[in-house]
Image 1 (tube, rainbow, N blue to C red):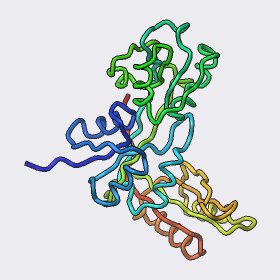
Image 2 (cartoon, rainbow, N blue to C red; image 1 turned 120 degrees about the horizontal axis):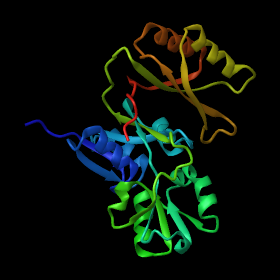
Image 3 (cartoon, helix red, strand yellow; image 1 turned 180 degrees about the vertical axis):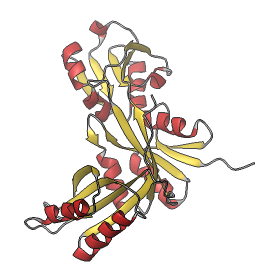
Image 4 (cartoon, one colour; image 1 turned 60 degrees about the vertical axis):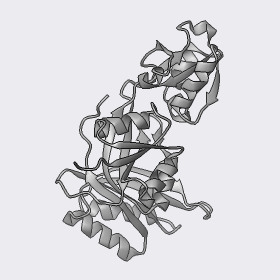
Amino acid sequence: MSKLPRVAYMGPPRTFSHAAALCLYEGQAEYVQTRTIPDAIEAAESGQVDLAIVPIENSTEGGVNATLDALFDADVTISGELVLEIELCLLAQSADLTQIQRVASHPQPLGQCKQWLRDHLPDAELVVADSTTSAAQIALKDPHTAAVGSRLAAELGLLVAKERIQDHQGNATRFVIVGKQPAQRTGNDKTTLVFSTPHERGALRRVLEVFDGEGLNLTRIESRPLRGLLWEYAFFTDLEGHRDDPPVQRALERLQQSGAMLRVLGSYPRAARPPS
């Protein structure tokens, strides 16, 4: 009997990261919860687990900075992705909104339904929690506090007071699978890399021209400050293709020859249609 893979996710249970891990492996894994996203990535880097699944971007709120910063520092590779449709619910002890004085959740879900909260609970205090599950646990102890989270989190003992409160109904979060083993080329792949450029006029334009010259389509580019270097930035980029594809190989070689800091975080199969 084959051994089940050990998969880390940011806990506690019933968070969206937990839901993504369950969706990915359909229960055929040994799940290991960690306190933070960097802890999950570190567990994969050290070999404590085989893989970690972490959120990297949301269609409403953009990149997940904790993941980007941890990937920049860690010796791991991205081997897959999962796009999960995110349905946010207002969870409370009662369905009576007039009783709610506070709304708790992780900052990302709070940002994903901020307009709904302004419209329906304009006087409620927003309370930042470590996770959606932690927020639900707060709401369990206080009848005047509601939580923003998943239906999975409602299983702790709360009512779904309102469903689908996200501001954009196409709301989805992209998760990446990280570990030590690279993914094989499939012909329908994506590559994630990070690069930085000299702090001089036209430097970023010249890098982008390399990708354009090889006919590569960039699907995402996002900057993050380089810690310890004032006003210097790293650019996290997704492009269509695998690092073993000749156009991608040529682009990477040209960038390395130019002296730009460059690191490929992984090439992996593109995700299918997002499951809910």
